[in-house]
Length: 180
Image 1 (tube, rainbow, N blue to C red):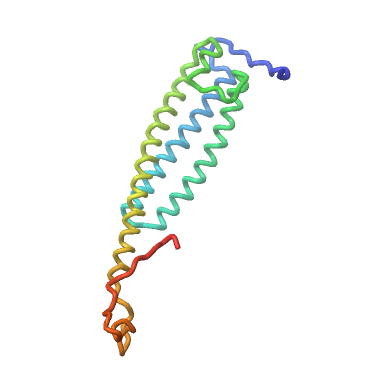
Image 2: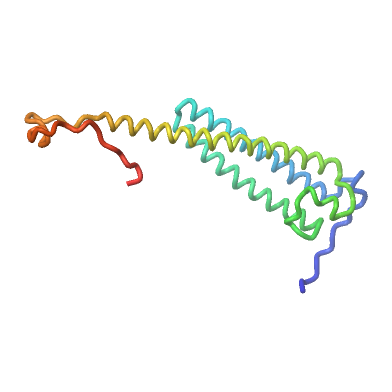
């Protein structure tokens, strides 16, 4: 059996009045939207850096994304606290809050929720594109290295290689295993 639950804040008239709990939830959603948009922008910049072959910009983008993701985790923690205040459970999905409370979400909260959902969808699409672009860039780099080393001639000596002196002739190339 669970312990006593914290009293829920007064909802007043959520359709007309933005109570402090709903105002704080809307602010959390708006902050999440700003961070998700910044993440999307960082993904676009990373893709441009890959296209321009600028490794330092790619690294800077990775660091920026890490900072954004940390801030996003903190904002989501705050949103979870607001949801716990309103619904009793911080893990309540945003699209279920109105059903649980039995009242429609205030327009400011609903608008912020829908805006965040659209940005999250756009950002997920950009992340998928970046994964593919980066995968192909890595494959192209691996192929380039293989080609570079497979066409390399063995070091030249004044007397030739041991194989050439034995009549075997020089080898044409070698395979590079980058995992070794």
